[in-house]
Length: 371
Image 1 (cartoon, rainbow, N blue to C red):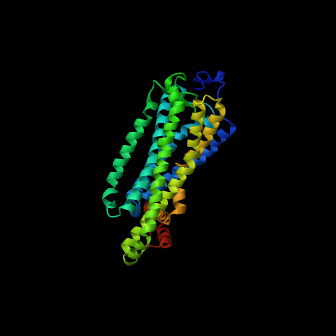
Image 2: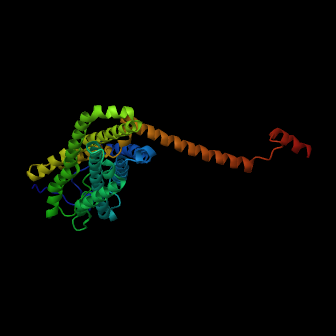
């Protein structure tokens, strides 16, 4: 392993290691700012839409609801990077930086793991409904979704628990994008694990294995649908309920495929870069640390899109999702209109003077005649 000369920053004035390029600073300031603005709004809208009557009855929609929660948590934790790299352009809260590092990186890793595997189980859910339609109602339930989610959280927590260790993990290069946190001491065996082995473990568990399972599931779903397409159409023509179920199933598949495509596009570049960087350390080759840090930071902004744009892609690709979202907006509009109406009535009762026979002008003349 190439033992480059990196140490934890104690005095920023003598720091000579990697630094954030102007491109990284701009991306973290405006790129992440844009992602937060649309990401939080979109994720909240997704939660509300998936809780609508038509969608919330399905286990797939419940999984998408949990996915939106996980994505929101990832964005919340990323706010620290936005402030530190994009706004202040320097380390902040140094007195508690070690604890913040452990909390942030653990929660970031956990939410990435959870989001990836929730998508895997969205695929499994649709695969079960396609392959075993008569048993799907027994297997694909909200209760089983909760059990699966708890299992994902337990496994993810175990996998990322080393980041909670005060003995190994803490501040590394404070203020530097994607390198602010890491091994407390660069020369201990944990540093080798963190820089060489851990990126490969992350790639396998957060990208390669989920991607493989999603591809296999999606391929088999497509083949099964093609085989049974004509039979389903014949039955559905005579049974409106079957037609509605087929439409719901098709729309859920569209949501699943669009989410998987977003996951591919945003996570694969980061994973490939992690593999290349780990191999460079392992092969003991000359390493341009500044380039690695800045390239990783740029790809991390791309990765953040995965946790922000699902709602907008779902609106573009699924008519059912759009219809349910519009229904939600109409409900909010009616509720706000009702509240406004009640407020107006209260104002009229408390502020306007009483009228004679309902006529305001007659009321004025009535008052003038008594003066």
